Amino acid sequence: MQTTLNCKVVSKTVKLNELMKKNPIENKLEIKNEAEGTIELFMYGTVGYSVYLNGIKYALGDVVGNEINVHINSYGGDLFEGIAIKNFLLNRPEKINVYIDGIAASAASVIAMAGDRIVMPSDAQMMIHNPWTYTMGNAKELRKTADDLDKAQTSLEKSYLNRFKGTEDELKTLLDEETYLTADEAVLFGLADKIDGQAADDDEPNAKAALIKKFAAQAIPPATNTVETPEETDEEDNEEPESTFVNNLLKILEVN
Image (cartoon, rainbow, N blue to C red):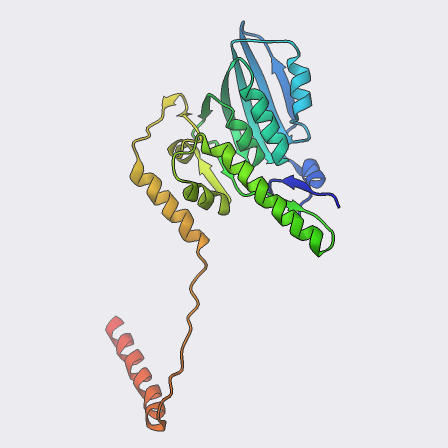
């Protein structure tokens, strides 16, 4: 049995290799070292395909600067490749500035967490969600895959928690709802620092609470109306339809 832990982009039935072909973002893994001491690193495309750790290592070579400006535009891809890239950048001696040029979704948002500073234009977005996978096998193998996903979930949450401004339960709510965050919302939750060069305003507890409430409400399934039928006399059974009809008629008259 072969299992690949990915992050959903289109639907849970889309396999990673199909996603690579359909990815509308032009693949780009490029290193520029134009300004002295500053390295420009562009990560566009699918994580684990066009954006991969060995390619980044090869492109950087022996170059060491003062800062690395990481530009991200990606719908995501392989979770653990994203974690590996994040940890590689964290262990670099340079200051890491992350710029989300369009979208940092799924595994790409994990890479963004390597930033000492994360900057988003006002029209950029970040998407976070739970890991998912596709697999095949017998019942025992499928149960093991579910256990593996639980462990992957733990790794994913740890990637965000160092930055996240909120509780673990609040983070889980956002992940459960596959949440697309605007630049303002990402700053509010600590997953970004600046919008268009402006300093973040983190004095918005009410706004954050409102967002959590909104996402949590989306996660709650609509209540099912259950009607208990009490034991009633024949006389009560005969009166109930008439009473209901009268009450409904009165409501209509009140509205009109």
